[in-house]
Image 1: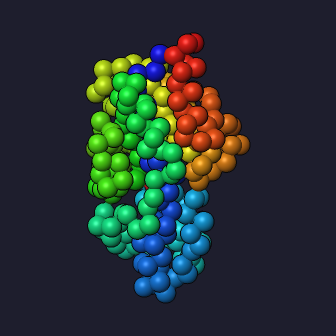
Image 2: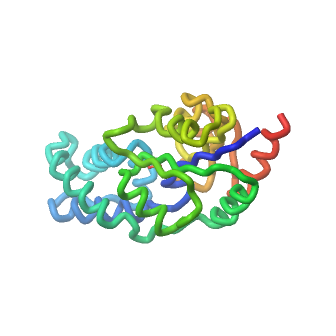
Length: 221
Ligand SMILES: O=C(O)COP(=O)(O)O
């Protein structure tokens, strides 16, 4: 029986690619480094802002990461100030969340996005939908460590086996598995089925509504 659903943010609840690309590319341009195509950010993101910057700098003409500390500092500041550039919820997400809430499910977000930015996105796009938002901070180990989802389960008073962890990347599937939760990979985000299935996805959802059926299936297991 599933009593709580824990969601990744970037690539799962909302398409945030342009927001990350915009902030990073403005900084790269100001340093005479090469701005990167928006699509590349599907692979730069997933393991937090610091990793995104490292991957991005390598492609932008700074393989030695000589600009890393400076770019990191500016990126974190600018991104906390404005993480919403062209961010849009995926189609069907709000309807699916409403239905889960109607069924009495507890809902949380667990993201490797910096905490301030994650809260801003959720407040702007999904106000009132979530009981808890956990973004990346010094207080918690980032995914794939299971700390965020386990904290959510404990705050909700449910066991990990009563939770469904939903995400779009290898990191997410590893996180849900490490937390001993049911894992669902989603195909509307940044990575493909192969990556999700080979890293522990118990089920794969093609559209948000599928999550409602998946919950039902586990209810009857
Ligand atoms: O910002 C990132 O690198 C990833 O964020 P996510 O955990 O919400 O996908």
